[in-house]
Image (cartoon, rainbow, N blue to C red):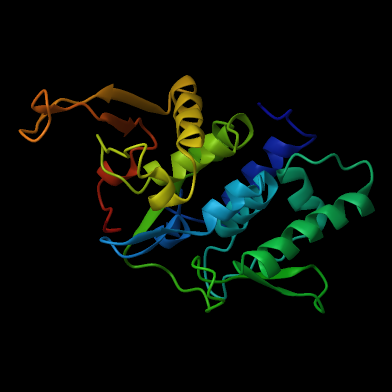
Length: 250
């Protein structure tokens, strides 16, 4: 369900995107946020926990904070009203929404271990931690990361997409065009159900962010001698792995 545009939301997000001073207009996020483990034995990352908790506001604030914390010391101290507007919260009761923003940041800190909060500092200093939930200090990723384009906010996908659509988009950003995620492996690989995956794919197709087609690959161990897996491809500007200069790795 598309969330209603909040008062000053678009203007606030535009100002935040400009203030982040990211020349590539993309946010780097480690793949481990989506999937831990090894290539031979993958395990779900923290995204799966957010999806299970239906924590849309937690994911939204995490992505906004990661976008704003663009350089050392990887913090983003903003007044609660700024975060509230960016999240589409009404601002008629400043104190109430300051508390809501505080609760979301508390979850990012205490439940997901994605940030640390300096509660003693006025202005709400919040510092990024590694995306694996280890509470290790954040560093700029050199490999095994994906890139979330500013278009995610500029095209209002943060409002239009529900948790399934957001999850599939983030996963898709780690993949090459024509990637396959078998329904039988979605839970093992990413910790979300095949129903959630199918819903997310439908959301992205409706938003014209992703296309799918039924592939046909020769496989002599199949009864019909072919695989018929669905192949997915993100469309521009979300096809970030195909764009020049990307060295994020697998």
